[in-house]
Length: 415
Ligand SMILES: Cc1cc2nc3c(=O)[nH]c(=O)nc-3n(C[C@H](O)[C@H](O)[C@H](O)COP(=O)(O)OP(=O)(O)OC[C@H]3O[C@@H](n4cnc5c(N)ncnc54)[C@H](O)[C@@H]3O)c2cc1C
Image 1: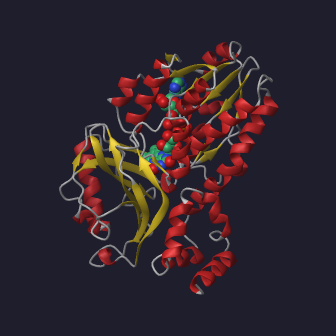
Image 2: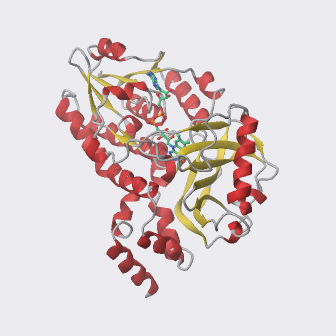
């Protein structure tokens, strides 16, 4: 039986561990927190996942919370008017319909549950914060070592790929609040959607339903341009103060959203998060001091800003792609060539996510403004935007190049 060590019990590490376990591999999962510590700790993400990523979980029978989590049937975009009396004017405001629903299950619920399932199914779960020296020791005892430790310190083993990483600093300051008591969206009270509220020159707020430790909730997620008016959360330590500042900024920049958020309360003291990181693509193979090789997974190798809500989707797709690469390799050695090929296969997809996400961090060019505006006039454009969150490769056909955007809009206008 082939022996595989996975470091990190997040979306990618756990999905891959459970998938390999189901395929008869002897899997050890090493991670730095117990299931209870995760469940009782702080939120880590907004983790909205679209239909293709959710299908990877269904394929492995891991969709334990699908019937309880709110179904997200749409994705909407609103652009705020200038701050002041016109802030609520919303020059752009539309919702696109998703072909298959999205869902967000609090990672505290999912990762804790999946860890317990992995152990119940006979997997070896080791609670230990791994250092490079640990990996050096273990690499000789396993056929393959995968590092799925997210954006933690182990990424230093993997060199930055400058050609694929245009930013060397964080492009947004992040501030998340999980709340109960958000009122329904008056425009479509009958179905749930992720709402992207764009505040030009200032940042974005994403609002979405989620399933958390205390049941269904909503997430309020500010992404602020560094140094701007939304970049005020880092010194805030009290969760209630974090929520108060979140609401104050909504009142100022998104008064229509504030109107339905007046009575919200935090889901729990761990329901807030603030931070920032630089989007980075890394070389996929890490070399250990003794010469052994390890393969990076998901955020370790491709970490995008969450502005497009893709990291968990990428993690699920990376885990599914690596599972396929491992199983189809049979008993052959997991050498450098195989590692590079496994990553290249994943990058075929992930490159589109990185290109689009990095584009969304920059001020939008004229043709992108026209496309976003057209979502309000043509339902087909709104729907295509929404569904491209599930398959960002589609943006290549109509989003990046002004000529393609114009041709697409002309074809939609012509019916
Ligand atoms: C504010 C915010 C909002 C987001 N919203 C979305 C969204 O809506 N949709 C979406 O798709 N993505 C979103 N993301 C991104 C998404 O959460 C991540 O990309 C995804 O969780 C990455 O999965 P992963 O498996 O690579 O790593 P992680 O989920 O980070 O898991 C890494 C694991 O490794 C463990 N670990 C770390 N270091 C060590 C060590 N040395 N030894 C042992 N274990 C270790 C950690 O404890 C953790 O269990 C968001 C991210 C943020 C920050």
